[in-house]
Image 1: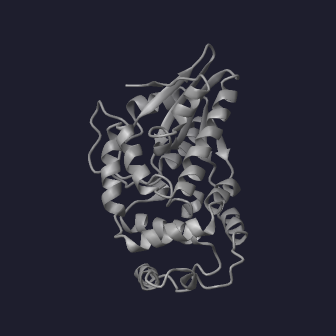
Image 2: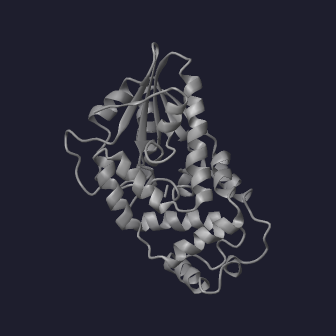
Length: 289
C-alpha cells in the first residue's frame, strides 16, 4: 500500500482511515532526533483519510508549530506536470494489457475495469505498474477515503499559513521512476496477484487506522509489509528510499534549526525502516509520548 502526485501515486503508499476517535492521550507515532543545535521530528503520515478523523492536535501539532521547516516525501506538482510525467511514462510494449496477462486472469482484469467504469484499453499504453497504481487508488476512493485529506495536505496548508518553508525529499519524476523500476515480469506478477485476490482495501485500512491513531507504529508496519509482498517493489519503494532519506537527514543535521519531517507511516517501523537506517549512521531517535 502506499505518494501522492495528484492521486495517481496514492495507491502504493500508506492509505489510512479512522475507525475510532482519538483519545486525548493517544496520537500517531512521532519521534525526535537532536544534537546541540538541530532538532528533527519524524512523523508518519496517512496518505488518505476521511473527513471525520482528527489527528493534527496535541503533541503532533506542538512539534509542528515549533518547527521552522516542513519536509515531505515530495511536493505535490500542478496537474499539468503530472500529465507530462504520465505521458512520458508510456511503454514500448504494443500489446494490449489484457494480452500480457495470464489467461486465467484476463476475465478478472476485464471485470475489474468494468467495476470501475474504466474503458478496456485504458492501460494499454502503459506498463503494469500504472494499472496497479490506478486500480489501487480507485479502490481507496470507492472505500470512502480522500487523498485531498492526507497528512501532507493538512501539514502543507498549516505550513503556508505559518510561513514555513516546505521541502521535498524527492521529485515527482523520481517517484514515478521508482514504480517503473522493478522488472516488468515482477509488475505483471503483482498485478495478477491483486486481481486474483478479493479487494480487502476497506478492511485493511480500518485495521491500520486503528493502530495508526493509537500510535502503534509496529503494528502499522507489520500490516503494511504484509500488503506490499513484491520483493522488488518493497526494495525500491521502502528499503532503498529509507537509506537515501537517512543520508539526507544525516547531512541536514549539520545545519542548525528545527524541522518537521513527514513521510509515510510505514517507513518508520518494521524491517529496514528509516529510523533503523539512521541508527546505523549513528543517529538515534527518541519516541515522543
